Image (cartoon, rainbow, N blue to C red; front, side, top):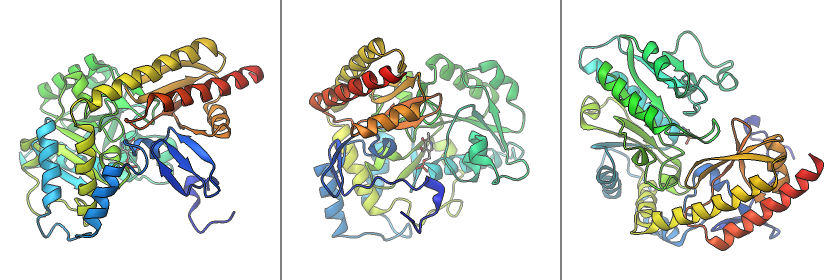
Length: 392
Ligand SMILES: Cc1ncc(COP(=O)(O)O)c(C=O)c1O
């Protein structure tokens, strides 16, 4: 089918009419078990009643007023994020990329405000993904994403993921800070070792540079904590959040400490839609559910249940899948055959998953998935792996 849309998403054919919980439905009623969840966005499944109600109620009050005025639910969401994390201040954006970009600007502005105007360079790690605008693609330095877009020296350096000596060697008197994902998402669902995080924190403190965590994908409950860094005990100076924070409604946030936020005085940064009342009404509704007592603990019991099922699949079908990675409900499954073949076969069996680097498939179910739905997923995967084993 021809499309007036640009081809940058590869013109997918499958389209859905509606979604409920774990499932997506076509207009003709075909049901798909959705383990993509909008690429780690719909953390409470499709059309969660509490989120729908929050959006509907807000839609009847006010859609948009701009940051010329105070927005009560935006203030409330910021205050809740501050209460729940290391942060003292929050800047709201509309996407993960913009949250990362805000963090990059803040790193530079922090040093500028202290008279250290040369400290502009930012160090990122190999296999990272920080978004698709110019600065984030320069940070991640994936040649596929950069080709034809960058010019000159955009001000980013790359070091090997997990190599603390390489990081130490890369820091110069021009370095403003370091950005990393506590759990790499697009790179292949890799948990960045907590011991390495601790050493990076110590190194940043020693050198007087800033540490930013990109939790756009790993954040908002997927790790069993609101943010994955909370599992490590290592706190950043800045943190980018998005995806799950809106449960499907576009929102991003850059969280920071007071000392990093202080130079961001009136006029230094902005966004027309950032902190929009509809987005933050839904963001508050997401926190209502996932921060309710016991919710994350119960969610992680079900994550363990899914992971036990996956272990058996790995044991029974070693010609297809090799290893599971990640934390909690941020699950990676390393494939032996091409991950695209596994994804296609699962799609045929009406289960949707998304690919990641290192020949991995990502399983990103909603945090409130039931054990019955997990049983269905595991059974579907077993059937697909059995079929793929025969042709492997
Ligand atoms: C770790 C990470 N950072 C940044 C982004 C970019 O977020 P967005 O696509 O909302 O701009 C993503 C998106 O996948 C991501 O996984």
